[in-house]
Image (cartoon, rainbow, N blue to C red; front, side, top):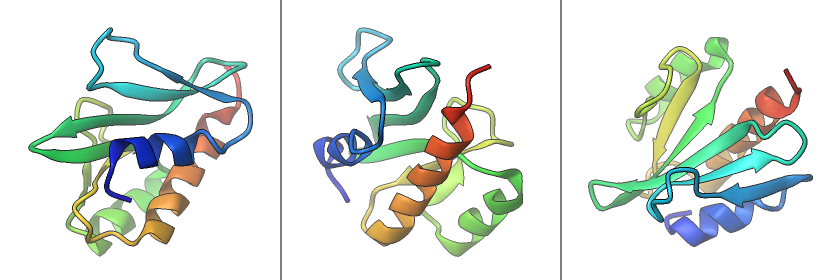
Length: 111
């Protein structure tokens, strides 16, 4: 995955989710759970690359960051619970999918 629309389309394959633009800025797309309105993916362009912020279990946070240089502490979010994935082609699609799925599961429960 490298294109913004490709990531959005992938995220929309999850059950009961929708695409939103909360800042009225087309650069910032979020994918939310319909029931709780909680965000599980923040998708945006930065430094001419697409980035995705995903929630992660703190036990896995450092694993992902050490496994891939393109996984960083989250841009503009809590760095304990969120990572940014820079879509520069170095993180395999399967691993990106695993991180998105984990974020979906972690944010699924309503408050």
